[in-house]
Image (cartoon, rainbow, N blue to C red):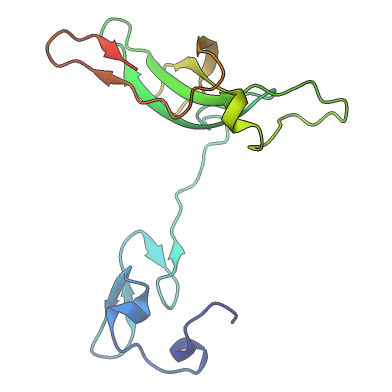
Length: 148
């Protein structure tokens, strides 16, 4: 019950789209009709698609990462992802990744490739040293060059 709107927990009907989490419409019958991507009595839950655990994008067992900007090579067809990755210190407690606490000074940009847009991506190399974050790569419409 905790986070549900009071009108739901009391068995009442919705009065407006606000009662449907702005993720659906409140019908004249007082029921939420959720958008295709939402579900639940008040449309407050995302409807996730099944995940293929073999294609989880980029995951490196040694380093924490976030974000990513992807372009596809016109010559090879490979997808290139540029990712913010935190350079983790060696951890004797056998932790695989280091979390986000060192992102300001230990974040670097790495490049990874895949034959599929959703991965899996294999790390190729570091492209920018620590203290670089949130890469965004764009293809020039005039030259076709990649700009990071």
